[in-house]
Image (cartoon, rainbow, N blue to C red; front, side, top):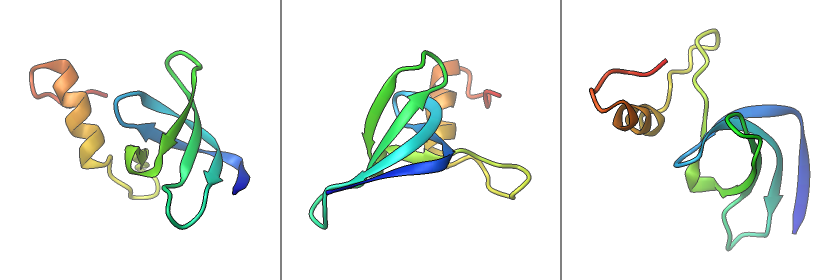
Length: 85
C-alpha cells in the first residue's frame, strides 16, 4: 500500500458527489483501483473515491473539455437539457 500526497492538489469531479480537490492518492496494489482522497467544493466533505468515479475537471486554457460523464450528470440535475455553468 502506498499513500501519495498531491502537491499541488488536482481539481477533479467525483461522479455522484461533485467537484473538489484531490489532495492524495492511495494505491493498494495491482488488484485494486486507485483511491482519490478528495475535498468536495460544495460542503468540504472528504471522500475516498475509486478511480472509475473520478474525472478531471475541464480546463479551457489547457484545451480540455468537460468530460461527457460530468456534463451528463449536470444536465440531469437541471432537468432541461441545458449545460450548467
